[in-house]
Length: 234
Image (cartoon, rainbow, N blue to C red; front, side, top):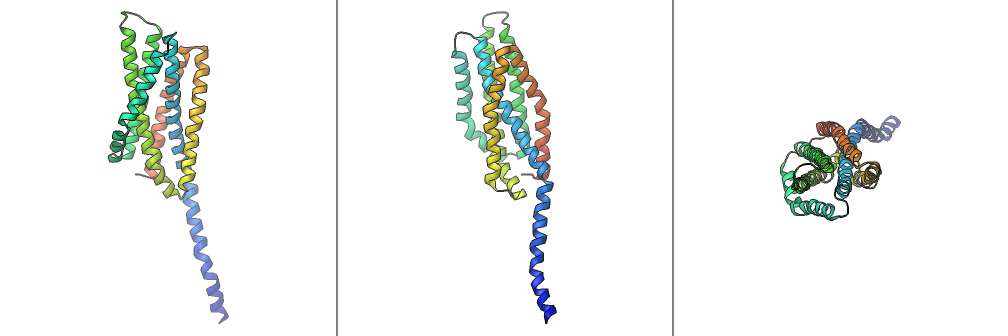
């Protein structure tokens, strides 16, 4: 009788112990994957914020005495996101998430690289007078592509993939969203400060710095998000 009682008393304590170990183990094993998600999101946000603010500074230096060009540039860039973000969201919803994010990375980095080349050309104007307005139009169009690509990346990662990762890792969604939001705020505050400090010394150096960071980050971001997808496909 006592043997049966002792068995009944000890058995209920076994499943919770086993369950807690099974929960903790995958979470510990998946921390590197979560870090890669943060790295990919940080690089995407940092480059976008730095280029967004830096481009206005570059245009102010290229066309001194007027903010018309910088204002038109910023207005058209933002307007493209306002007009096309709904359509872009539906496209992302119908697409494979990894493919959508990889394409968004390419379409973020390529316009930035081409824009930097145009900014360097505008700093040393040569040839006919219509070259500068033409390059400005090209830069503005490229900015629209960059903005839309960043929007697509944000929709795919923050709105969708973050939910999958939080459920898989048993992390409260509000905690993961808070971490992603802190990354956004950190990049939004610090990236403009960094590029403005460099621009205060030399606009040309600031342009090349933007191009260099953009080129160095693309492969890291590209493969980091691929590793996240291999563990938690969506």
